Structures are given as C-alpha cells and as structure tokens.
Image (cartoon, rainbow, N blue to C red; front, top):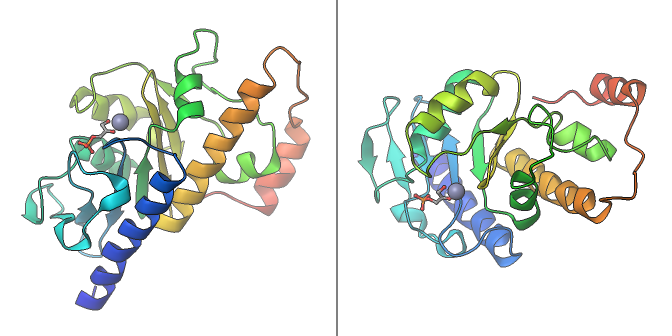
Length: 215
Ligand SMILES: O=C(CO)COP(=O)(O)O
Ligand SMILES: [Zn+2]
C-alpha cells in the first residue's frame, strides 16, 4: 500500500468518525474504528480519543502481531478488533460505537441472544443479518476477544451486552453503513415494542440474501 493510500485511509477514518460523532452515534471518547492494511497490520483510533476530533497523523498504526509502529496508544479494544479480523479475512474495517438504541437493546433481558433484533426491514437483512449477543465483559478485557472469536466467523456484527455494537465490513464505508443500519433498526425495534410488528418472512430473507449477499 502506497503512502498516499495510507494517508487517504487516515483521512477517511477521521472524516467518517466525525460524521458518526456529529450525528450523535457515539458520545464522548466512546467508540473506535480500525482498518486493515495490505501488509496485514492495521490503522486503529487511539484510546480515549473523541471520534469527532481525530488527528489523522496520530491514528495508531500496528503491525500484524498487534505491535504499535507509530501514532498514539491504540484503542483498548484493539484485541477485540484483531479477534474479529482473524475470523473474517474478507473484512477490511471494523466500527464499534455506543450508539444509544443499539446499547438500549443490548440491555434488554428478554432479547434472543442468538439474534437480538428481528429482521424488520430489507436493509437490515442486507447490511447486518443475524446479530448475536456477547455476554457482558469489562471494556478492554482480553476475554472479550475470545468471546467474539466464536461468533465472528458466521456474523459480521455482534452486540456486546450492556455496551454496544461491533460491526465489520469489506471497506470502512461498508462497516459504517452497516453500523448506521443497525442503529436505525434498533430504534425501530424499540419504537415498535408491544405492537407486534410484522418481520420479514424466511422466504423474503432468502430472496434478499440471494440478491444482495453480505460480505
Ligand atoms: O468504546 C470504548 C471502549 O469499549 C472506547 O475505548 P477506547 O477509547 O480505548 O477506544
Ligand atoms: Zn465501547
């Protein structure tokens, strides 16, 4: 990857981070973003950084073993991102947010831990699919990586209990789109609570998956 490409990726992380933050999709210094590099390493947002005010030059660059090569100290969830990448060679980027409605769903006692949000809309099926719940762990706890490893091969998105979503995509743009779709569908799910909404049928889901395969 050329220096120009890496510069472009650093700018894209900062631009999309600001867009997510400015729309209230994560608060304070919560959330983190990573992108896989051609050499097997990653760019990751620094720990305790506000996604709305990232400095492209200070984004952490790590090698394929997770050692910091330059930039600020990486997110405390770096091993969570790396565990997900290890299971998903097709994924080029990961977004983790504390987006309000998704976090709200992650706190509900009655959700199905194998599939937290029903298939309410076509775009949710196209961008997210089945969303498993990962049991609660401390933020930054290395055991979170192990918990995600078993699920990430079959799922591009997981929901951390009482915490928030972690979403992988082929590109950073794809991961951001999927995270936004997840948040909007979590909002719909909560809006429709108690109203017995009609979810898509297995046939409708199969048709979408055939026509618009996810990564
Ligand atoms: O969302 C977060 C932890 O889960 C934010 O942590 P970092 O500031 O270390 O990225
Ligand atoms: Zn978090």
